[in-house]
Structure formats: C-alpha cells, structure tokens
Image (cartoon, rainbow, N blue to C red; front, side, top):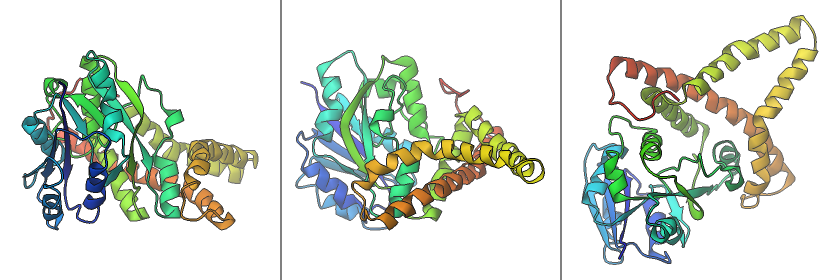
Length: 330
C-alpha cells in the first residue's frame, strides 16, 4: 500500500499557521504522517503546531538556523512515506489538495513527480494587482515545461533522495534547482492542475521588493535565467533611455513605440485582472481602475528589485564555489 508523508518548513508563522493546519484537518484524504521542521521560530509557531498533534499525525522537529532547503531535507530524511507531498507555510490547502496532488503518482507507478498548482488568496486590492503580476493562471501553463513551486508538489521519496534533496547552499530559488535536477534525471512530470493551494501575495510594496530581491539574488547564486536578467538590464538601462531621448529630440513616434512596448509588457498581467477581481474585496469601478493602474507600477518595481538582487547573488557565486547542478546555464 502506498503511503504519503506531508512535509513542510516553517519560521515565525504564528500569524498564519492555524489556517494551514485547519485546511489539513479538512482534507478529503489524510496523510499517513505530517512532518514540520521549524527553523528556530521566535514566536509561538511551535506551540501552535503542538496544539494540533492530537488531531493530526503530526511530528514537529526544531532545527534552529536551518534554511528552507536544510529543513526540507531533514523532513525528507525523517519521512517514512513512499510519496512526499510538499507544501509551505503561508498557504491554505483546498480540501482535496492532497488527494489531487498525489493521484497521478498513486495511479501510475512510472511517474515520480506530480506538479500541483496555486491560486492567489488576495485580501486587498494591492494584493490583487500584485497577484496579476506574479502568479500565472492555469491556462497559461505548459505542463511539459512547468516547474512546480514547492508549495504544491508531490514526489516519490526515492526520487528526492536520488537527486540529493534540496540544495542547502541556496536560501531562495532552491525549489527550481530541485525541479531541474528531477526533470533532468526522472521521467516527465505529471501536472495536477486541480491540486490547488491558496497563496497570499505580499501585503505591501516593501515586502514585495524584498521578496523579488531575494528571488533574483537566488538566481544569481544558482546562475539561473542569465539571459532573462541580461535582457532586463538591456531594456531598462539602454532601450528605455534611448527611446525617451529619441522621443524628446527626434520624433514623437518614438513615444508611441515606448507606449506600445509598455502595453505589451503589461498585457499578460492585465488579462489576469478580470479573473482575480471575481474574488476581490471590492469590485466597483474605482477598484478596477486602481488595480489596472497598479499593475505597471508593480511590474516596474519588481524589475528594479530583481536588478538590485541579481548582481548580489552573482558576486556571491564568484566568491564561493557552489556544488555543481545538473542545469547551470539557463
């Protein structure tokens, strides 16, 4: 009989952990065990977790100072299930998430990875606009190339061990390296589009900047998406100033080129807005206008955060010798 271990890491999640644990209580299929690794919380996260131990098959391990990768690897080592269902703090699970995310692996022994999905859990109009910029809709996903977030994925334990687990030298983007290593050595991923977790976007511009700065720093450390980052620098530091100067000195047509380029760049985010507004806290005309105007501002703000973070990670990579990865020239 196939057994399932649900694993996750937490750190100072006292404000959000109850929602996640309550969503575990209502799952249509319960895991055989739940292993939560706490990285050394200073709040009441661990105490809140212990309060659920009489209702869930829950084990809480405290590893002070462990980063996300180290915490997940510790959970993998202690897990006994054939399948690892992996999620993250700060989310809520749809009531059938565990059943849906593990279904492909239970149905097909040849598969090793089942990629779940995630939807925005926006509480404010700012978060709606941010979700439009940062979270794809399911119809945008190409299953054959989708790299799942470790907030919604299931993998056979033996496959996770075969690739060495998560890279502990990375503090962000660790799940991308994990995915790439699995994809390079294991059969194709299954895509469980209906295995949904609800993820709340960052609540303000500062938190968003820190998030994307850290993501880009992780890209630099791992040497991920090099061409994407180079293109971003070229557009903002060369292309945009050139168009502005040409519009001011040569011909107004260049302003039209600039506006058309900006519209094209924001279009993907804008097309997500109608879907996200269905669950927005307000849906009046002013709310729509505010969200649509925020989209390009947040898009540019996120790009600035990435441009600040990437060279910091790249400099770290040059000063250190991180272990080789299967894919290192993306």
